[in-house]
Image (cartoon, rainbow, N blue to C red; front, side, top):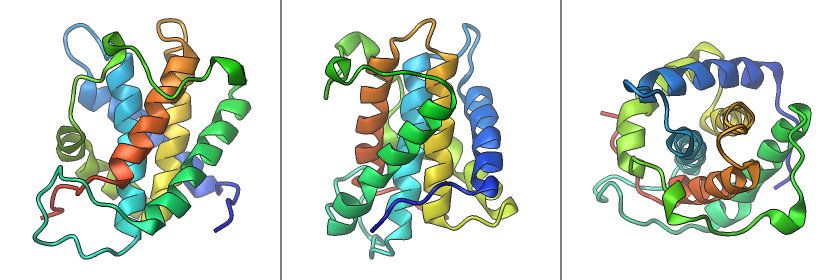
Length: 180
């Protein structure tokens, strides 16, 4: 599968996802940067997983689901994230990108909590912009890039990138909550 440049509708949806994520995750102290970035990335992975058409009915939300499709198409989200960061002038030094992140940078919500809080509204945005699940996944990856840029004063973008990469995997390999 080849990566394609996101379309205008995906950029429009990404802008709405960005605002929606900030609005839904804010508390009296503001928005926890790591949680917002992980949430956007996890939703990108969730949309990607749903695009595979796997038979997930009857499986317990939050349990792992492995698929070759996730291994093949999941990395394309990194391409979209990279393109988004590049467009936003966020420069990452490859030797500073790690595959892990410190415990202090863990998100405050689980994958299923993120899905319950965000997916219905994000799905409405996707429908509004006529995006299928795979396209919505890439729009969420673009929103992730925007969140990394917006939080770069309080969170090292290299750590944020690792959070995002991990979030893509979590979302694309975790049984999602039911759409009801």
